[in-house]
Image (cartoon, rainbow, N blue to C red):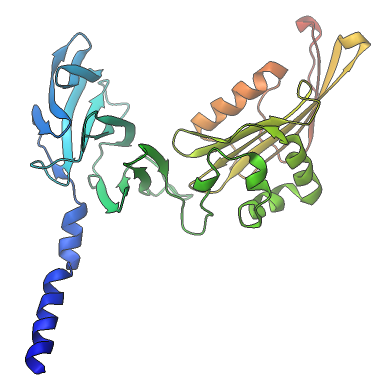
Length: 320
């Protein structure tokens, strides 16, 4: 019996990876600026091209910039499944961007620029079945300005990428492609929105998003819903955007009223956000501003109801 137990324990110790073995599995292997790498999807090379310098796969250009390099491979140089390559426009104002490339099988799939090449640790990769977790430095900081890692989740089967939510933040991934009311009707997902808007105005937001298509994911992290009130899409619309990482959101309800035979329009905007002042991410601000532009309104990060008044004659436009 003792011999049997000892043999079983030995087998378990061999089958169970140690902490060091697990850590080794998630470290990428640096390529030391190699100018070529054979992958299951083809041979990657770097060198001069009509765009200064290029990363190419079997002679086809993937990316070009002032400087490019093959940065690292996962799980190894000998058997790469993911390759990180670097691009940089030159100068010292910005760090080189690290792009991730899925080379596990042809055709290769470019995940885009995910991280920056900094003095922080190189990216880490961890596989969970078909899901791959990529951790690195994307230049993000906490409220005190300390650098924090950014984690992306990549589904190699569906070729989809999204940011991982922080601890305690609801997972909105299942809402991608769903009608906004699926989210707004879910007690677990709408809790923070109800607290931010108040019950009455939240119900108004929900009604203003009644007529809508599926919610879209922008920049791998912002869930965007746009819609309108039933039978009133031309004058009454709404937008809701949620950061999948932090759970923060910005929402706008726009109701337009016409007078003087349509010459004068009064726009009522109800806006709520829990992003900090001047803290709306660039990609999200561009999305909201482009949605607001047809109204002639300017994006104002105020939690209180605001009222904008203008006319269709630019010389008579006023804001109050």
